[in-house]
Length: 225
Image (cartoon, rainbow, N blue to C red; front, side, top):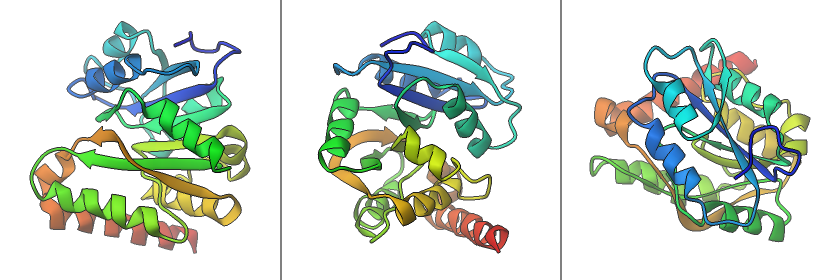
């Protein structure tokens, strides 16, 4: 792991976070434990948190970038702008990566000649979270133009900049994936390399969660018209 802004950085991890003190430590600990020969940096984009998010980020020697909490797309794009890596890896504050995440996913992406990729995931929490997990692993990954979830997305900087980053719309990761897939090959490593919190499912239930994302996608489509 290198210091932020180092010219030798291969991959920059961008972690948007707003009042994520309950989860961020787990995400950053998993990044610190990566078993890889790639050089990487970690940037936490703070959305005007009122808890100890910034302090936790500094505890793990992550660079802290201040963002006004406008949107998760704005946070991700600002992190990418400040990043030094040739590759950009976007994860969420409630995501934990496996130790082999970077070596496996970047190695897969380069071998397959892809501009961006994600991997299978495990979603923790209530049993109904497994249905959401299956949708991502066996639905999103098998689409002709796969949807890469924002909690685990590796993309080459050139492709990211070419499509203009994450659109500032609801369901920004779906919109971003569609922009990428229209111009570049993208895909999935069919190995579980990340764990993501099922907290939204716990709060809203599976039907509520799916409805939440459906509403966001409808808003995204309306915004695009």
